[in-house]
Length: 453
Image (cartoon, rainbow, N blue to C red; front, top):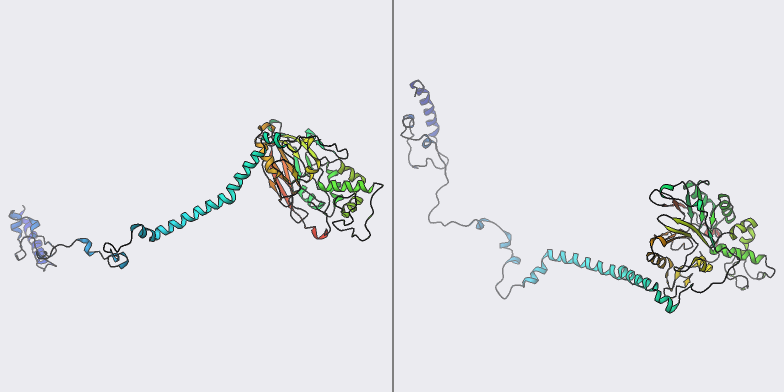
C-alpha cells in the first residue's frame, strides 16, 4: 500500500471513530455488548480484523427465556371472538346446522330469488303457456280429417247462388308486383276500413306517394257509412281506378237502395225517429231496421251505387313471392273451403269460428278467432299452396298483422288511424310495410249510427 495515503486514511478513520463513538440507539456490536475499544486502521489493514467488524449493528432486545412465544393469532383482535351471537355453545344447547344455515342472510336472499323465479314460471305456465298449448291442441284436433267425416264441416254442402252480387273477382295480373329478375315498379296499396273519411284517405295516399300509373289502390270494404263523406270516398276511389271488396256496410246500403226502388217498400212508422239506430216497428224489408241506411242510400248517385255493386265479396289478387296467393276480403274466410263455396254473409261479417263444426259467427263468444284456425291450416299445407288474407272489419281488435292474416281496420272513424299495407316487388321477394295517418273522431256526429263495425 502507498504510505503517502495513510495520513488521509487515518483522518478518515479518526472521523469514523468519532462518529462511531456516539452511543447506539439500541445495542452496539455483534461480538461483545460491553466492548468499547474501536479497532484502528492498522488492525484493519494488517488483516488481523475484518473491516465489517467495525460497523455498528443493531438488533432487537433478546427475549427472556422465561416468557414463551405467543402465536400470531393471539395478536388479532377479531370481534367474532367476543360476539355472543357467534360464540360456541356447549353440546346439547346449540342450534342445528340446517337452522343456522337458513338464518344466514345470504341464504335468505337466494331463497327469495328462487321463490320469485318459480312463481314467475308458474304464472307464465298457468296464464300463457298452458292456454296456448290447450288452444293449439284444439286447433290441431279441429283440422283432423276424421272430424270432417264424423261431424261434418261447414261448407261441404252446396250453397245457394246469389245473383245480386259479385262473389269472386281476379285482379289484373299486370297490377300485381313482380319479384326476382322481373321486378318492376308496381305497388299495391291496400287500405283498411275508410268509413267515409275522405280527408284521411287523401292524407294516406299522399304519405305513401301514390302514383296512379304504377300503383293500384285496394279497399278492404266498409268504404262508406259512419263518416262524413261516403260519396266523396267513392268518387275518389273511382278516380284512382281502385278495386274494393264488399263489406257489411256496403251490403246493407245496397239492400236499402234496392228496397227503395221496390214497389212494396214499407212506410216509416208514425212515432219513430228516422235517425234512430233501431226500428221498433219491425218493417219486413230491413233486418236491422236502420233508417240511416236508407238516408245514405238516397244520397248516393246511380254511378256510385253501380261502383259499389261491382265490388266482389272476394278479390283474388294473385301469387306474390313470400306471401303465396293473396286474397282480400272484408271479414274473413273459412279454412278448407273452396272460394266458390264460401258463404258471402260470413265473408262480410265473421269474427270467430266453431272448432267442431267450422261454422263461422259474427259474434265474439263461443269460438276462437278465425285467424288462428286459418294460420294453423296454412302451416299444414305445402308452401306452394299457402294463402295470405288481407281483411278489415274488426276495429275492436285493431291492427292485427300475422304471417298469413293481416287485419288493417285500425278504427279511423272512431279517432284511431287509417292504415295501408304497401306491397312492392323486390329481388328476394315482395316487400311489405305499414303506413298510417291519424284520424278525427266522427262518432259525436253520428250518435244514431247503425250496428256493426
